[in-house]
Length: 151
Image 1 (tube, rainbow, N blue to C red):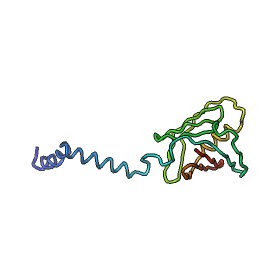
Image 2: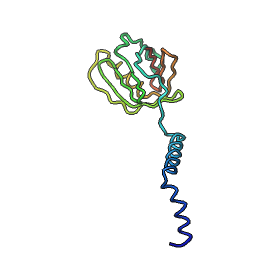
Image 3: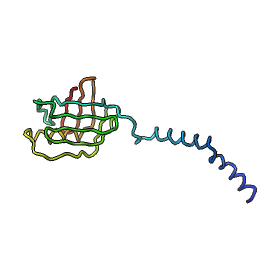
Image 4: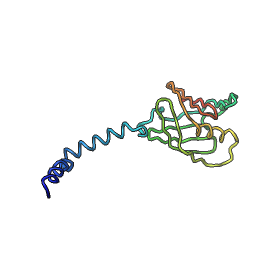
């Protein structure tokens, strides 16, 4: 080994020491936190939300007769469980700073007495782009309409 290559090896040996490994791991975690696509904790309020109204894209409003049948439960784990009358749906979601996006929602396909409201609700939720919350109220908006939830 030449003197020049020994010098280069000596500088790399630091990377094998536990203190250097800890420093590198800390640096990697810091870079991940700064990444644009890093997913952190959600900011949408967790828990069960009951649908009060659905405002369609044409501005007509449907008042939900039985809010217990139209719910969305946002978990702190980034998963949402949805009840659309007699159907159940699930998806992942990301929220931050008033923006909201759902992954592909998987739903059961039973015929419900409220049809087509059940599929319309799931469709509007699937297309969600933004949200506002004020404690006991949650508003979700997308191109298909606006959903007004309450606790």
